[in-house]
Length: 187
Length: 187
DNA sequence: ATTATTTGCCTAGGACCTATAGGTAAGCCT
DNA sequence: AGGCTTACCTATAGGTCCTAGGCAAATAAT
Image 1: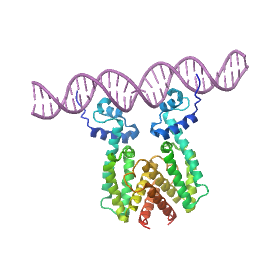
Image 2: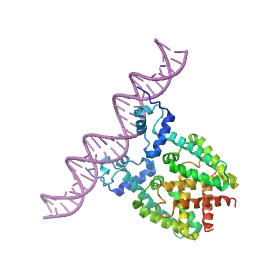
Image 3: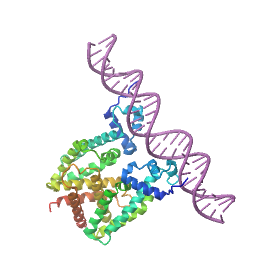
Image 4: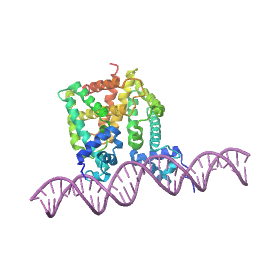
């Protein structure tokens, strides 16, 4: 019988698409096997187990996201870079919700090392316009990530829907606030 | 045969404790039934299904968390209130990780209404010292929640462990930044 | 081109989780 | 004591995760 031509990469790609369709938590080995028209057991030649699949998906998403962000902040600086960075963040979460969820799982330091490095570099690139130095640079980077991730995460979970105030307006205000706090940081 | 004396509330309480022990995603109907020494099927007289159990757990956590926060900000104002609010937030996430995870699931507006109201009230109580008015009050509240939730969430997922800078120091800096941005908000 | 090796996918099966249907017995009320 | 409600049961079915072991297709060796 003809082979489906499975590889770990093809499985991970398909899992990512599946995650965006049905949600990260509904990405199962069975569903993925169904998608390729093979039996569950066949996937275990390519992935160690379900958790391994999730980790691969997270790594894929982190790399893809890093590329997007890098592209969006290229050639910008100061508040322009901040806004572009933030927009890339929020847009990715909206367009690729499954991948975004995948990115949030805890990875062991080794696995995350590459992505972590690239993300750290880009964050520093954005913050370069604000003239911050260690250790404040790290504090600022953590605040930046916290704010963006927190906002996007709460928006997705519906926490902002209970109030008529437009989410977009609050988002812009948050970016203003971030910009001003970063500019005033050295003080 | 003796009855275990199950009720939806007792199940929810036990589920919450279980969540803190083994993680929210590992709270299953089976595990809960085992804990009470009854068969899985017996639980379905008290809860509609597994999702219903998770929702009840989330509501429990939200209410419990609201109580804690209310207690911690009572009698404080301005930055004191902000710091107490933030500490309650972070401490709850650390001490009750399963409950904290449960709180993040998306609830339909009706189910979340009570908790949402109480949370909104408390946030407004914290922000009272900063003399903000609608619609900026909502923007500020959203920024506050985003920052706290984002920080706590990233800390828990290990995103901050890749750098030697102490997380506590970054946390204090983030609170300073929040305080200053809230004070400068009307500008 | 035939053989040997690897590898992709299979069947079979076990463990655990979710859920429903229908039954029995414990506890409450009068 | 009688009847009613309900807490818990057995039985059953389907879904997911994963392992063991087998055959056949693809690939490499001769």
